[in-house]
Each structure stands twice: as C-alpha cells, then as structure tokens.
Image (cartoon, rainbow, N blue to C red; front, side, top):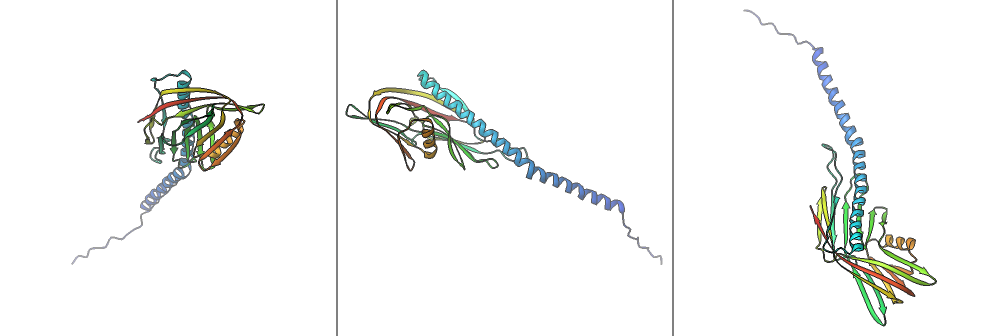
Length: 274
C-alpha cells in the first residue's frame, strides 16, 4: 500500500514582508489622518470662523448704512437690500459648516425719550433689534446685534459697541445740546433664519418724524438692552453724559438744563429672505 507523504509547512518571507508592509502603510495613513483632524482642521476652521465674523461685521455695517441712507434722504417706499452669511464654511470630508441664527425681534429693546414742554409731558419711543448668533466651535462664539442705531459685538469676555448710534450729548456752559435718532422696527414681524447659508435683509422706511425743542424740562433717555455695561461705556467715552444709572436691563440718563433737543423717529419694516 502506497503511503501519501505529508507536505512540509515552510515559512514564507515574502508573505511576512507583504503583511508588515500593509500594516505599516495603514499606520502611516492613520497617523497622517490623525494629524489632519487634530492639528490642521482645527486651525483651518478657526481661521474660517474668524474670517466669517469679520465678514458678518462688514455685512451688518452695510445694513446699518442702508438704514442711515434712507433716513438722511427720507426715502420711503424705496426698499434697500443687503445680505448676511449665517455661518462659516466647513472643511470638505473633515468638518461641517458652522451654524448661525439670525432673528428680527420687533417688540423688545425700547428707547424712550421723555420730556416736558410748556408744562405738557411728551414721550417718544422706538424699539426692536436684529441679531445674528454664530455658534463657533473653534473660534469664540459671538453675537452681532443692531439695536438703537448701533452695532454691538457680544463674546464671552463681554460686549462692546462697534458702530456708534446717532446720539449726541454735548455740554457747554452747564447746558446740554442733545440730538438723537430713534430706530423703530416694531412694525416688522418676528422672524428668524438659521443654517450656514446667505440670508437677504430688506429694509424699508415707512415714516420719519422730526421735532426740535428749546429749553425742554425733565429730559430722560431710557434704553432697554441686554448690554447695559457696553452702552454705559459708550456714553461715558463719547458724550458729555449727565446722571447715568443702570437698573437691570434698563439704562437711564437724566439731563438737566437742556438748551436744544432734536429728535428723529424713523419707522422701518425689516424682512428676511432665504
């Protein structure tokens, strides 16, 4: 009977080298991928988000410029259009785009002017704001707000007025000369838009009212705001402000001996389109 011989098992250097080479290639690829995701992508995204916040500030300045132009020229029924990008672009395959949310809030944030003329009390009001909150993941989370004719930048360290309102308070010889413009968007609807794309902003002037007062009495300017400290710094650094106090979200300024007071109230309709 013929016996079948067993085939001897032999080591294969070629097979071992192929296996080790494949493992090394995978390790190099994973190391490179880890370097990209942990080092390169965060730096790239931080730059994207920082650049986007500069872009947002420019776009809000353009919107403010449109509003100021309509007031100066008293152009009613002449809508002006601007845009704002809600979020920063992402990194393809590695990081998604940053999200943002824009809101028009017409029924909050009042500016109130109270005075007495010839024994009769007078009151003027304007309210509403526009905000864009950008939920940055690598750069600081920031919110840009247009309120009372000014642009405010809020971040974790605090808030600051970046573009000034049309408010002038000057003292000369113990008497004040005051000029202010009140922006009223209370006619707008509460609307919002979210995502990372571009949103359109249409501003339309409905009416303007101008009044001048000589030697008014009991002049008080009140601002409702989520950023009273930022407004306080602006008034103290840019005006000859009188008595100023903060009560929660309310900032109050009392002015005695006002010689001249000029007030403009402008009513706007703000619409967002995506």
